Image 1 (cartoon, helix red, strand yellow):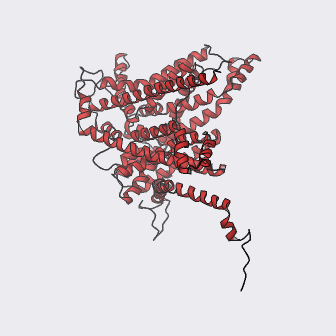
Image 2 (cartoon, rainbow, N blue to C red):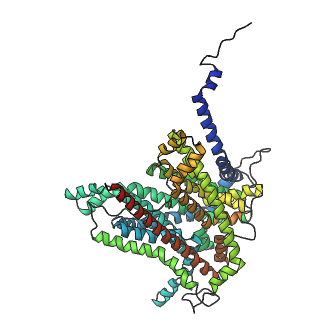
Length: 592
């Protein structure tokens, strides 16, 4: 009888039996299982579309890469850099991005500076006046701008009344610039305001007490401390301006084509090769700018995510009027008026009695509001947008919770950076490139024109924003409470839902809301993917902007603005009630 030796601690059997190693393997397997559906969605609806567009750009006829007969052709890229017509489009796009970035910085810097020096309450009111137009649907704002800049608009009427002759900015380079700056301004103000409120005012005060003049203090002390915010904000708005589609498509004329508009036109006539090459060119330019933002700011934070916190003026450096402060105040009110007036402009246009949209309105009627709620022309798109937005929000929050859960449990800084970078990759990818890529993939999968196809497409751009909110909340949560639940016998799943998720529920609700709004307001992806008879509400409005405005369009626009205002008011009341409740609880706890 042969007696075998018992397994030593170094044998595979002993290793497999080690409880610590089993727990580590089990934790790794759990993470892989959690990430699997998220990775699958990203691969199918982000990685595959980008690779598909790249393959079409390297194909001579734009049909895509054929593995059976592989051919790589750079003819489309060569055409981009030698064709005079395409070079003019590229230069026009770069020039629009540069000019809009410069104008945005010139308006946003004094505005952010003035608001940062005000009291907390006043700063909060002005920030809301900037953010409310930002939260209003972009197609609503563009409708207002087209009405203002049209030959029958208020700008032309004022020009004629003042004796300057006819001034119509619609379908011109100037009109496109106005619309682009209007869209980019809130981004830049928020970035600069965040940087300015984090400045140590004691350094500025010390420079003044040592005899430095206000001008010298500004240029040698204050400006260097906010230089990073200026550069990162400028690069961010340049990225957005470079790949923007809606503004030049609506406000620009045939002679004002940009790269994004040209791509859309080429896809309409099935010229995939050159359109894909132009899309990849945009992607490369965006990546270069994105790397610049990360190197300057240290990280990438999507603009407009989360509430803007009004921190108020420093007690060590109180608000004082000066010539520079007066100029900043004037620029601030001009900037706020520039953002708010177009939003308010839709209301008088919605109550005119005539069958055409004119300003000033003739007569008064609420008939067009009634048509919105009784006509299938609008009820269908409203229902479609609601269903898609709810589905997108639910899927986005689920993906965000999974990604945040995995990253919060990781100890590797590199691993967190990789997951974070991949999570934010879709929102730094040009929208027009994503649109044609996802359209191509969903054509192959038979998802074009379907609700589920649009939900997946919207989730790709909404999930990163939800992730930004949830991961910040989860990283600051107390993990000791969850660990205590484990020791009391709760399963990891139950502890996560009952302890972690409930603890960050305000952020989860905020993530749901931002994903819902992102889907509700999205136009570019829906424009390509929704090939069926029922479009989403923004696409329906966009189609009317292209073909001609009917009176129900300003009625719908007015209702959308009112919804945003109601949400802001309710949110403000809820925040105040929560703050008062917290203050009362703190006061009770402090009592002996």
